[in-house]
View 1 (cartoon, rainbow, N blue to C red):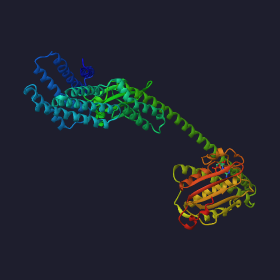
View 2 (view 1 turned 90 degrees about the horizontal axis):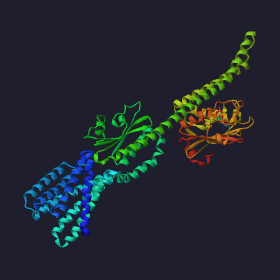
View 3 (view 1 turned 60 degrees about the vertical axis):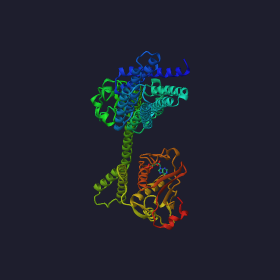
View 4 (view 1 turned 45 degrees about the vertical axis):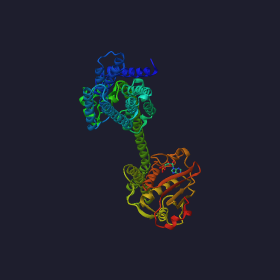
Length: 603
Ligand code: ADP
């Protein structure tokens, strides 16, 4: 047997083997797509047997019958290929009809005309076939660019296969026109014929190992991301990632996950109810539950697998393909594998959420307890003084009704009542801050004037405060609230520093901001506490509750006010050396000469 014969024999064998394999598959699962694939390869296989073996060995007689039948079979290839194209992508009706008409006409011509066919007739028939093959090549190639993963690769192979058949056909026909090159043409024809067999085999009946190799990159990419998935912000995001990963791995157009959630309609479908992976094709006995899915995803086939972790049925994973042959039986295993991954990821997520909500609940309880004990503790001291003082005054008045009013006693009573009022207001501010804005209307205010008025009030210890503000600085603020924030900072500076030390308040502008700093030489704030002191109820570790009264709300409120003004608040401090708190808010345009003067950026 010559090399050429071997090549030819190999490609015949290949086509016959592919036919056998797709036939077995079709008998097992007679979907329309499988039937189309079997018809296509069946036609080629019979053609091969007839022309290749029977005619060479003269097993079938008479010769005209062999010629007619093999001619008709060859012409059917165009039509059958188009049916395959249609299984993977839409084919315009006009093209379909034209190919059908062409097929019927060519068979009639073969039957009517004498054998062998006159030259012109054979040229027309070959041209028709080549045209159909060119169209098939183009349609498959286009579909390869529209799909991804394994499906795209199968489409590439189908396009290459059709191209090779077209080439083989053209080459063989050319050998008739140029008989002097017959040897070369025949060899070339045999080689591309073999190539077409390989490509078609890979496209329409890819062995499982090859599908796995194709699916591998997408699968690896998904598994690479899988460990991060449980930590995504929302369960919805995880579900989306799982759906995308599954669709990519299977080369399908869409995938969806239905979770069995008390808030959503119950999950139905065979895969969920029977707890096993299922392939549902529209033309097969599809579950009525999937009718809507077929519509929505324009699917002709759905692969479903239950997502189950141990005994817990979490939901179902569905993968949709607009064309049934996109899937193979072996894909069921892959979908089940992805569903199992999804189960692990979703279960991990549920555990993370559970422990987070447990922590949040514990934190809420702790905050409430903190709040109650701080509030009760701080309200108790002035209240006790208030009651004792009132009792003393009452007793005195009862003993000696005509005596003059005890002015100092009454003023102590007032002082404690005011402290109580301040504490209560602080608590109210905190709750307002958490639920809404603390601010009223903003107005352009000269902050220097605001500071001067503030320190001018004769509050306890306020005579220790110095103000350094050379120029007026304007900013749009809620004057009352802004002053409240500054007061909190100044009172802290006074409270946490020795009574003979001074507190320096400075005002300046820089980079379009009004900046105020409040500096003391007090106990300072340990570095580890500095980022926490603006939190609710937080008091630094160097603060002794008995020496320094306070609830740990002043800075929290001050920060809330500054932030609601669109400003910033921060601090610099060293334990034992003192602290400086800074506030910066956008400066207003009033007094533009000041804002332009960078030298005032002293804070
Ligand atoms: P309170 O003063 O009622 O404890 P604040 O919210 O005003 O609450 O302050 C929170 C904590 O920040 C204080 O308990 C204290 O530890 C620390 N702190 C605030 N200002 C100063 C300061 N000027 N010097 C030292 N520590 C300060």
